[in-house]
Image (cartoon, rainbow, N blue to C red; front, top):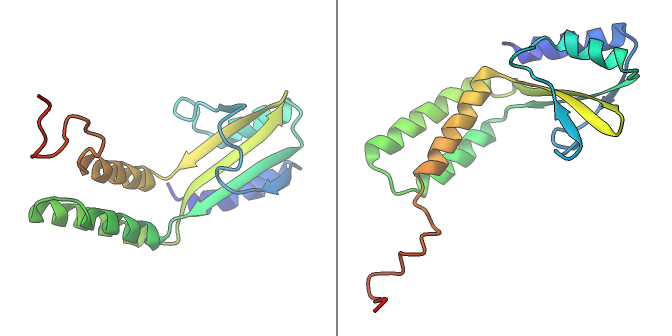
Length: 159
């Protein structure tokens, strides 16, 4: 899925359909009073826009984000602080660095419209970006649990 091309296609369709386009930032809508579209069962953004039109929407919220290599650098920094074997660290580094080819590519697009005090949202996330997020979660899960209340040090007795 090439979200760069799809972004341009969506903007052209919005213009052709006569929608006013509000160019917003990702995350600006928050989660309160938002209703997500079932994009797994209905992945066609055209269906979402048709629903918006039928609901009387005249303005569509449009946001997108480009992937930046700095995200890889941040994860590499976090990785450097973990107590991992050399092989584990290298494997994570290799996997992280494989995402550098996506620098500057659109990784997320969000469409939304307001109806009845709620925002109805349609989210598109590039499959490679979902993999990147999954890898970041793997790295976070590899970190030792800092909130281990039973671990109070080697010289303290609970007796």
